[in-house]
Length: 129
Image (cartoon, rainbow, N blue to C red; front, side):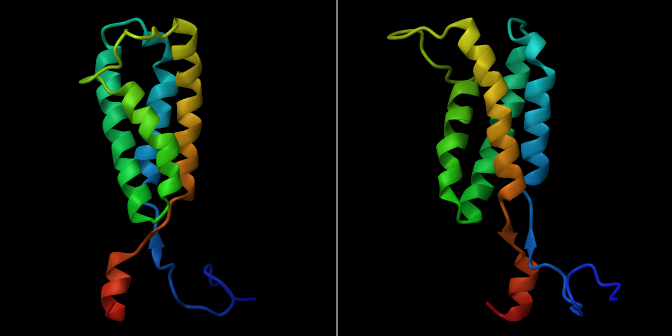
């Protein structure tokens, strides 16, 4: 048996990275851990952090040529955005809906973080692409 962890007899390392893994998982953990702060002033800071991390994951979704993840990531960034929050008119957002979305958004972030693979830039440079 081969001691190689990348496949049968292969000495090559993978040619991709998962740069969205850390920001996606971190944003999901922060959202799940701060559910109790929804009505607090501290949640404003949480919204900044989660929005920035979501935009980073969305950038890597574009870079990984998986733009369909933007269907889930853009609404997260828009809904969580603290600088330009959603207006109260023409609709109001119920507190129960905010709680439900706060539970659903981490699933989108985790899904994107785990599945996005970006080609390794150093490997492409070595190959001469």
